[in-house]
Amino acid sequence: MMSSTRSPWSIARSLRLLALPALAAATLALGCESGGVGDPCVPEDEYQQEFSGYSSDEVNVESRSFQCETRVCLVNKFQGRVSCPYGQTAEDIAGEQGTSPKRCRIPGTSGERPVDQITAVVNAQLVERRADKAVYCSCRCAGPDPNARYCECPSGFKCTALIDDLGLGNANLAGSYCVKDGTAGTAAISSQTCNPNPASPDFCGGDGANP
Image 1: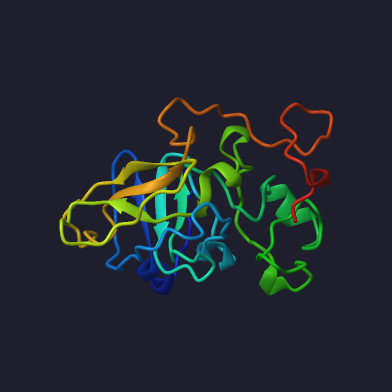
Image 2: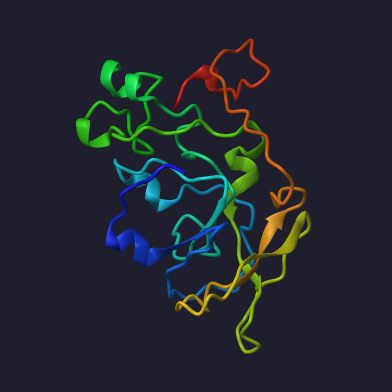
């Protein structure tokens, strides 16, 4: 797993759990509305230049996402950055302009300004765990608190246990979340990553370019 630098502000707004071992830190309440479950979202971590991306052995819950009606952006066993499907190597960072299709950028920018260029090496997304299967708006559908309000998962989603209550102040986030059918990530995940070559069976679209 690649390390990344996260600001205190970002840490206060999200929870990261490592599958082995499980770690967590957050105390934010979640909404109970299920409208918008499944909508795409880009986690706020990706607006940091130094953020190298997520790991496929972890679950992240961003509990105040303004991109989601539910205010919950779920990152479930996803590798890399949503905004950079093909990732970038140290050689790309050293030898390519910020606007190059081989580079990663702050979402919604061209990468022309240095402040918008991602400075960390980023792994390419896994073919079996692309963003549409692993990163989207969700809601907490069950949990340890019998008095809490939970959502009902819409058709095509299953209420899946993702986060244990570790007694570290994460009770408002612990529990189950609405997960797309067949994408819980409990089975072994192939290590095949997105290949920018259109002739490759692992091509992930976008003309082989990072957006």
